[in-house]
Image 1 (cartoon, rainbow, N blue to C red):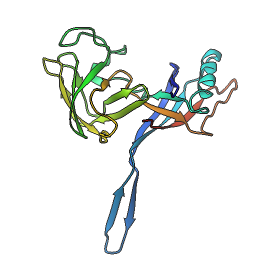
Image 2: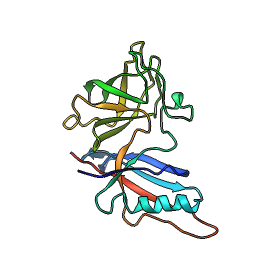
Image 3: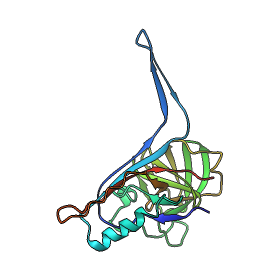
Image 4: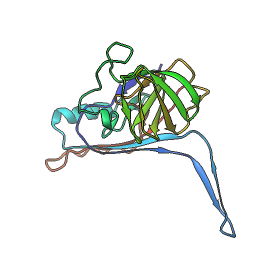
Length: 217
């Protein structure tokens, strides 16, 4: 079973976090252009940390050695958008579900309308989602799918909301039941070989690295 490690809770000053949609584009005479998409979209990230204390730098040094070298993965998320922006108070999501019970940012996948439209339950009434917010659909600890929300949506009085997502959900690997996550929604990544930069000097102790999503089934 794959080992999943968390992204260290250190101060990141920059985060590039974007999806890649593999495609080829061919340009021909008469101003004609043809494009073909292929494969599965995936996420890439680059993290840059603030000037680290010795303790924090040690955490990142240890993380660097345990986030891909021996097949491990880490939970990668956009540190500048760790939860829906309209619900972000600076603290982890909390509250009460519309159907009762404590809410911690997790919901359930009620149904899949199609690969680009899902219905989520188990939310507080009036829970607001904005374009660009993230949603994670999780089949198991090692099988996750991360998406951006395309249009604004609000949970109804029963805590149910319909979401339009990008890119399409892989319906071969994600079938009911699944959980849905809005608190630090993540995918699984490994640090790109050779991307780690960890200078240690009086003037510069700001490590950085890039990473790429990996899939398990």
